[in-house]
Amino acid sequence: MHNAPLLMRGEREQRALMHVDDAEALGIAAGDTVRVSSPHGHIELAVELTDDIMAGVVAIPHGWGHRGTGNLRVANRAGGANVNQLMSSDPADIEALAGMARLTGVPVRVEPAAKAARTPA
Image 1 (cartoon, rainbow, N blue to C red):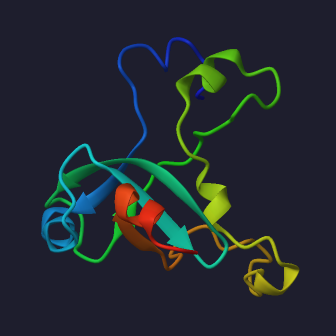
Image 2 (cartoon, rainbow, N blue to C red; image 1 turned 135 degrees about the vertical axis):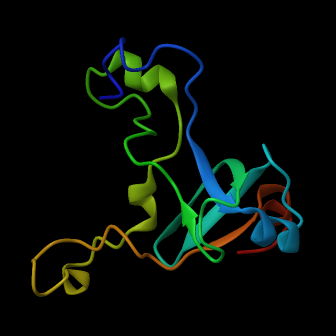
């Protein structure tokens, strides 16, 4: 859908949604760039603050961060971060009942990107 010009018109930008109180505790302001990390990788993107999401949760829309892959001209121009980089690709991490990769409920850490850049890995 990110490659359909009609659906990508206007000023569309991928943003992480985060509860206002969580952001305040971490020193994060609306529009800041944050680093979202899991044991499998990290991504950086702008954050939008809201009280419409439960505290302790961060929501990041998928379907962004194509980075020149395929013939997806519109999607590639849209930019964004690929949330799949936060997921495990280890076959041992497949959800047993459905046989699917875990793509929701992934534990992550969120911090200001500037702070993450100063912290050694």
